[in-house]
Image (cartoon, rainbow, N blue to C red; front, top):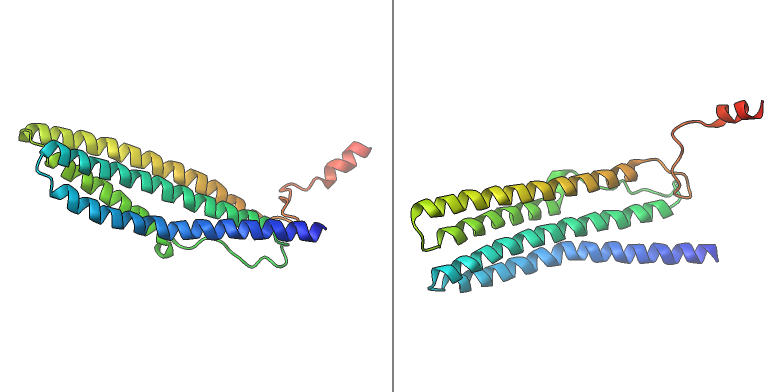
Amino acid sequence: MEDEKWKTQYEQLNQRARWYSTQLWVVPFTYLGLVGLGFEKISALKESYIKSTGFLLMAFFSLAIFAHVSSVKYYERKAVKAMKDLEPSATSSSSGGSPWYLNYVFFIKTLLCFLSFFFTVIGIWSLAVDFKTKVSLLVLSLMILVVVYVLAIITDYCRNKHLLDQLRRPTNSCGVDRPSIDKRPLEGIKNS
């Protein structure tokens, strides 16, 4: 009975991890397809305010996809951690994680960040206002975008660091954290 419960949990976590991995491929490529279509349609517009609004919406959409990809990667790692916790330590062979230069998500998030800045610059530059106003709006919007991305990256880094620290923490065969302090000497003091 317990073995069947373990197997069911493990299969569900495995399906969840696979779904997250699929999302990491499907969402960015769907986004790139939509961006290609959107860029063509928005570039063909005549009115500067509509064109500018379209490009700024694409910049916001890039930011939203950046946040989504970050969350999907986090929950994929979380599912893998839960699977590792279920595995007996003797059979656990997965090390988890890869260097940043082998991490596909790193490149996707870099592309999303770049495109967000790109669409912001194009959106503001296509406004029909004087040069001084364009530059002021551009500096202001880029500063806001930098702050938003810095906050998103720091938040993503902190929650992933916490999760990766948990992944690297030694556990026993039941997935329970091993105590870092040997409590046996304290038991002797209580008994005397």
